[in-house]
Amino acid sequence: MEQDAIGDLKRDYINRLLVEKKRMDGRGPDDVRQIGVETNVVTSAAGSARVKWGETEVLVGVMVEQGTPFPDTPDRGVLVTNAELIPMASPFFESGPPRPESIELARVVDRGIREAKTIDLSTLCVTPKEKVYICYVDMHVLDFGGNLFDPCCLGAMMALNTATVPAKKFGLGEDFKLKVDHYPISCTSVKVHDGLLVDPGLDEERVAEARLTVTTDENGDVRAMQKGLSGKLTFEQVKTMIQASQRVGRELRAKFGLGA
Amino acid sequence: MGGTASTHKLIRDDGKRYDGRAVDELRPITIQAGVLKRADGSAYVTWGDNKVLAAVYGPREVHPRHLQNPARAIVQARYNMASFSVSERKRPGPDRRSQEISKIISEAFEAVVFVEQFPRTTVDVFIEVLQADAGTRCAGLTAASVALADAGVPMRDLIPACASGKVENTVVCDLNKEEDNCGEADLPMAIIPRTGEFLLLQMDGHFTYDELMQAMEYNIKALNHIYQLQKEALRKKYATVQLEEPFVLPKREEPAPGPEVDLNREEPVEPPEAPGPTGAPAEMDRDSQGGA
Image 1 (cartoon, rainbow over the protein chains, first blue to last red):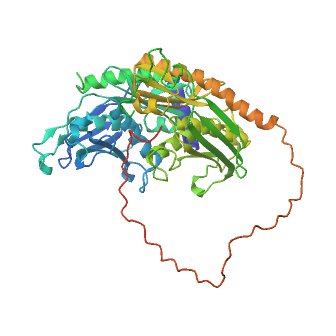
Image 2: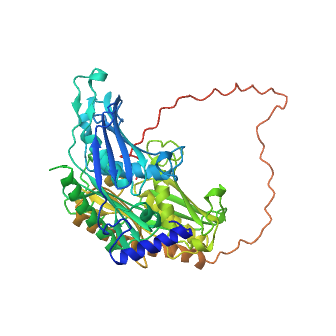
Image 3: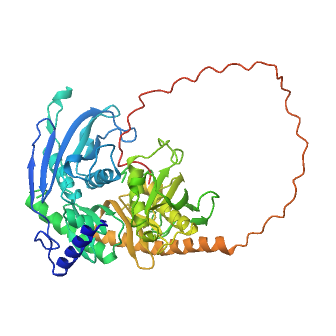
């Protein structure tokens, strides 16, 4: 939460607009910003997606390598998700070891993808106990204009959806398309004063009191949730945010032809 | 969720769980306030087979200085699992999971501590999981809340926390380790009991909307019970009259005859310690794994 005078002014402005069901950029409280997705933008990666989500821009690259499975899942490949908040993306980001913010971002996106069983990890097994494919999903934030969870989740989804496992490179047969079984979409809402805003912009996020990210699958079932920030949410607000996520998930899956 | 198959049925034919609990029943919980001497406040919680210790220091000066907030105190929680708290030794130190948990627990407490009364300070909350059996973040938060009250940090309310989930398509309250590993969903939650407002809310797994509502209901019922236990623990600490032991000069005992020591004997020279193995295996992030 921003404490300075500018922050207070913006908070007042955002609150006043919200009374009339308006927002700074002309959206309604439940509207998601304009989204554009371009896939396979990086040829060196197994799969990639560049997502422009309002003023936020992220680039997600999927790399597939070979490695050994975890001892307790000998017949399953490995999915590793990582987020980089690089300093070029925002004056608030600094270089150095990952901060709790980027760890949280990566883990929340990971939970959505993992729990929705997006990738059947047994398809990434080469030889049980010995060799499996390790699928790295690296999310690079290029321009931070508020709400990183949803663009990163969509980018990860789209990058996986276009990824090819480079089996030939490792002498393990022909290259094959990574099979995507489910299409989780996350939707983040914030509480500002007493109103709720779907898909917060940068200023909205900076004055937000509480945040809730909800990831749903194509059936509208909930696969992951994460509350953030040090504000409180009522049960009613939580319910409204979950329902908003179900609606946005439906809209985005229709828009990008996912799970049709 | 782990998604590993269980070796036995988790829901018995009589509708009870394999440990005999009803679907909406908590594991046995004990809470003890003020268990450490050095800390400003502390608490010890046993919750099923979980054993969690929490300590609070502060409000005190912030280090490093740049973290100071001139308008209010910050709350810095550190959730840590002891290396021996799980059956396969956990590599000591913060991993990504514990950093995330520390972050959300800090945020939860910032909502209830009157932070604006203590500008430029930090309230440090340390949570040590000594023995883990699923639900450690909730046990930790429950303990830390009592420790904060024990430290006399002004707060709006105590925060109880609990995780419900789903096993074998049944919504159940307070998952144990087996249920957590083999279950289909997990919903850790913390609220302000007086208002019912949510302070911590996480979920992973697979819930339909109705199942999710059911799990939240179980949680809320459990949280109100845990809240009572928290209050009792604090009351007990201050209600118990601590009888001072009368001061008795300890009897001087004759030193027991020890083994004969030849002072002129030369000690064998210890060889210099060999350097530890380098290039330890790279730690991989295991989001599907790692305790509770």
